[in-house]
Image (cartoon, rainbow over all chains, first blue to last red):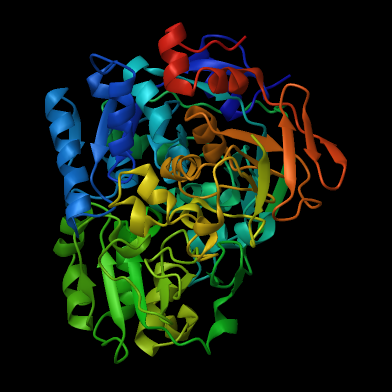
Length: 421
Length: 166
């Protein structure tokens, strides 16, 4: 019987042959925490009585969720992280470096075929570059920091084929929202999803990362893609680690096979308060917005900022709209600055904040007031997610967010046809 | 000790943001303080209705979303003896057993708020005392039972110097 990518990567790291359903202890290639989870990682690491990290080159911490600190409680957590890094001589990315899910691949910590754990649910992002990466809690992460290992249940796999030429104004974000609508927020729980098809092959690595990033929003443990030439070029440009690309066998066993022809897909929007509550952007044009946000581990990359800036260029956002932009890393901020994208944002009336998670998780950088409506490129629109349970969050692509900010209501970006990439 | 059901108003897809909001988890480190704010965004006075030894009752995909371990920690600190739900999201599932909080999977439609419940994970039975109903629960995997016996994964890891899968 052939094997899926998940079965192969986990087998490679367990040193024995595994199939879906098996439970095994595996060696982990890299692990990390962020400022929402590292405090408990540190506490659990100390409770374990560990004297040192199993391998200090295989761990980092990132301050991204509330960076810079908005209050004393968070400041205490940040200080605790810095002190811990110093005490155990561990790497960390301090405020302003960017979002963990941008930094971990961009800084070359991971490569194809790796097994990676992060104390953040969107760790599944690097599945797009053929990494078995998944989110765990803080204590699980502390176990791995101390021992280099953890236990894994080998997931069953859903095979997803995405085919067709992506229409103008439609992006990988629209594809994953469309898939979330079909599969549902619970549809892939405890499963691996493998993405294939010419649409994926024709996409940039940036665009692929958006799809894998949201695998957890359908419950998946990881959203994997095969490594093609684009992937290998990308990882070699960013990492010195030798890639070990892993393909599924032709006779691998899948629990389900899904096909999506996206050649007629239109811009999608997830409505409050669930990621799978998805509708066509064009059907929501009556919804007025108060705030727009481009950024996050889903859509804060250069390509995303470029798409949004192209729609905004030379125009001013609608009166009364607050528009926050958070580049996903310092390097992206600088590259966007060089290209004049940052200038476009500022001149259009946007506010560019420090690289990091921005207002996504409701701790700072644009907490909504009662009754306010936001349109955001993030991956979650749960009630209260942006800091106020009496506000409303719509999720969309960078193009849809930028178009909506210009009109002040949810807008299909194809209304700005000449400005689409 | 007697255990009483504490049934959530929202049953399915209750995410960890709803268990404990990011507003609190980023600034409060004391789990007892966090416990005062559980489910605040979906049921504002829920926390005040919980008494020690209660069993939380939920539907499908409980604990989806964020990986925050503060979610099971806050529930444990609120005094919950266990959670009974139709299914769980995977990160929450690991986190709960890792900190020594028991999760049981079975049908929960018949349980009303305030019902007295008896739970036996070795026999795999959940009994609703008042209704006289006994339900089979999905077997708790061996490793998870061991984690509970050892008070969580830290205790387990220290005891065995690694994971005891068998």
